[in-house]
Image (tube, rainbow, N blue to C red; front, top):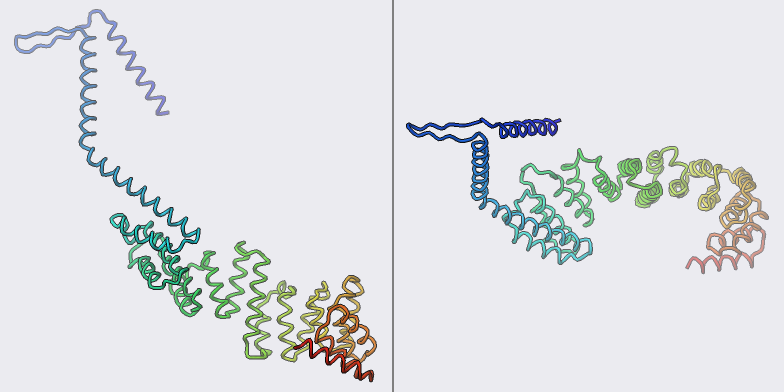
Length: 404
């Protein structure tokens, strides 16, 4: 609309000029005392236009000359900024290429050459300091790392990224296996920032280092919900945490500790073999076979998993009933019937239930597939019950050799 009105006004002025120039009797008289100057209207209009053009050119030329020093200063400033950006880009590329020593030396030159432009709160200087501190950390130059960390300090000034120093310090503390320091930094500086994916990943590492299972499981689920962890990665993380907590517990883990770990799992997670297996092993080590049996059966009735079948064979809550259930599941999955774990589990349950012939057949079949000390020890017991002492002694010898 503005463009249309401007064109319309310009057209009206042009039409007025044309009409004025076409008038035959238009005259302009200029009187100065006794002096009189008569000019045609067209001449006056052209003279005024020429005068206006000269005035505009003169004013613009004067403004250009007056602003010339500022333009020179601006050109120099832009040139230095371009050089600074180029130097920073080279530093970033060197960091990603793993040239950490070059990054630290480039950061020193960057600070020296662009000191006038690099105020402590300047974003580019803080980026260079962050890169240099991480590079120094990679080459184990801790004094240089701490120097650049100090350059990330805000000193109470308002900046766009106030958590940068705290995040970097926490990351270094985790790498240095100092979880307590990392925890103090994160809890003090970033308590309100846990929804950030990067922060949550650091908190997950911290929870893993301190074996804080509730927090670790919570963060793993949050990251999985935000697609920062694939379901397989989240499951592997939870499994590793669960195993580590049970292994590091006062050996063997008490029933209360195992129960607390088990209660952290959701109903869906209690159907995951990689999470059920360490808990079942812990229950068996604590001598609580009923709990182990209940966990294993809840998963096995949905699908047979080799690792869980073998654990089920070592779970002796009610061997006769368990053997019957296992054989029923195997009948529904013929491909699992001749597997090592299935044969071993049937042999162990048969041995515990007093079905010596079944135990002997299944254990001998398992031994043909894989010779292990566990199989040989069970065979030695079966042979002993069946009064086959030479075979029992031979199985014991084989078991000792395999154990050694």
